[in-house]
Length: 153
Image (cartoon, rainbow, N blue to C red; front, top):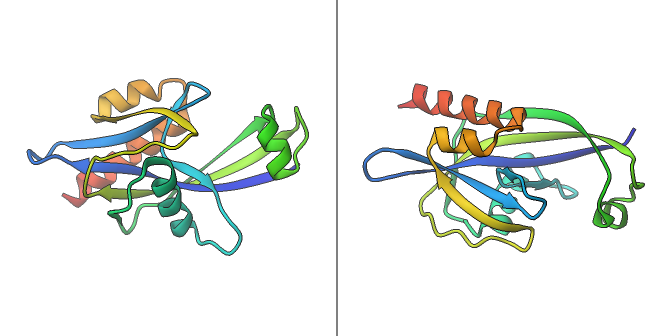
């Protein structure tokens, strides 16, 4: 069975009043998620996460918060042409995917989404959990990120 490895981050912004807002991107396929993408040859996980945030959200003034690293795994079936062309997969094939998430603080909220996405939102924890409904892995990563931030404050 083929495998894929990606990295990304739970990106947050701290408002002047101390409230934390989390960035979610709406993929063209309709679901909401954190910025993430495939690891390029020779790249470290942290480098991939920062590159993907820059490419997908246009954010570059970021700080990775030390000590937070969560890896999820799931299976998916190949259903898009670009997966076949770019990755050498077969239509309908099952792939085991690993995604490692970091926690990144953005110094600004000026998002410029890529062609891969159709919208974005900065959301409170509860709003973000609602957008991630149906994606238990995403909800769990967000929950752990919030708990980590609460311990750091």
